[in-house]
Length: 64
Image (cartoon, rainbow, N blue to C red; front, side, top):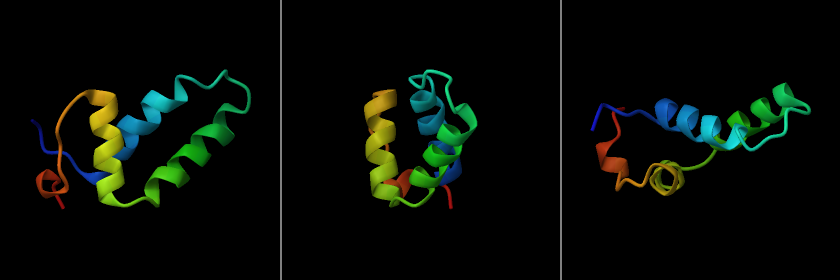
């Protein structure tokens, strides 16, 4: 697995979630998603990333 950071996880999660937005208020939805995921714990980020990417990433594997 490549060197993943919190920022990389956030970008991946936001990218996957923004696809389901219908295009209305795209910029607002994008900002809201970034804000949401920037403020969750690393554990929650890993859990969501694992659900989306079907991996088994742990906080210990994140690059600081």
